[in-house]
Image 1 (tube, helix red, strand yellow):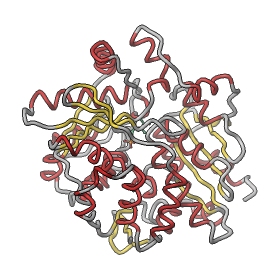
Image 2 (tube, rainbow, N blue to C red; image 1 turned 180 degrees about the horizontal axis):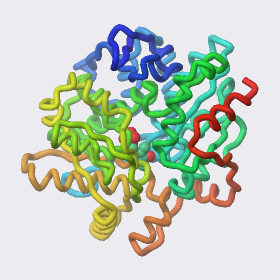
Image 3 (cartoon, rainbow, N blue to C red; image 1 turned 180 degrees about the vertical axis):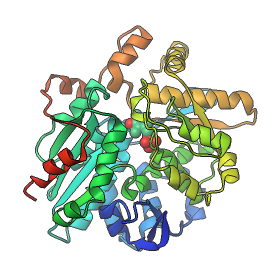
Image 4 (cartoon, helix red, strand yellow; image 1 turned 45 degrees about the vertical axis):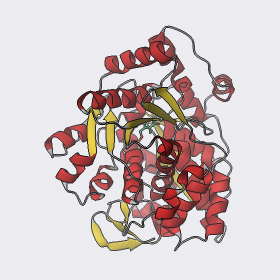
Length: 435
Ligand SMILES: *Cc1c(COP(=O)(O)O)cnc(C)c1O
């Protein structure tokens, strides 16, 4: 597959180049030049396929020019020892549970595939790779787990001090080995800016092979399309059109849904569901994109003022706002509405939602109010509620089960390097590394 920059169609890259460079040199984002169509016969019998079979077929459709089917199978086998089950919540609403991976957030789907894909390419070279990643909460944990102890790769994670949950912080700061955490006295946007600046710094890029693991990397976007196909496979027998509600921050998840749609997955509507960081819902309403500084909310993994995948979303529709607003409806809710939804659904069904997932559920309910057509609603559950145990317990007024995998983290001492959101400080730290 050939990729080109969103800023210049002539600036192209192979898969391997796009994965290791992350960003094109003109600071655009990589997009597929052409979007291959999923085989209609495969779609016809997709309900008989397992998650991994679906992942292999989708990846092969996209990447057959770059990787053999056998190698794709090996990458998928290495990446996924967990599933994306659909669970029924109300008569017409289903949750797609994306939190069964090692860090218990949906970002495992992207990070694990990316780690396996990079290892695949690195097997043929002796390169040392330095991964830089900014996290608003869950990316760091998924990336840390995905790359932990992978030979030839070191990982530097930047996270905003005091703005991630205890468990999230422990997931970033307790693995050690080739993973280190920088605790930045600032916001997620500050962290993201530092990483972006490093990639544009020729002194750094000539000394190190830098790679990004943020959702801007195409190697994370592609695998996130797998579970949209898988959700369709699990719900196809109901015979109704699907509406996907996607809790969104940087809009990588929703962009992956759009990729699946553009490959031929039947989707009636996407809901862009978010918190008070509402640049995308405002854009869908007005046609003008006006990012604002991020504000803090209880759904902290979505506290993104200027979503980096926005340009990809619009590009999937040739930047035509009329087409975009037909296919995507925007919703945003404040913390009180989020908590109320968590309580309501727990009261009615006993199902515990994390705050991000609650926003996606609420958007689906509001969409249903104004849209009376017969459809199956799917809301994506992006994290296990126990990742936000204090908030969830306080909101529901009762204690919840914390899986052993998370519980055991809390007793381990965190190790982080504190720093200011200053590029010169960040660069000095990176330059002092040995390789
Ligand atoms: C990262 C994250 C999101 C936002 O996903 P994007 O792809 O950045 O839109 C939502 N919920 C949780 C729990 C997350 O970790």
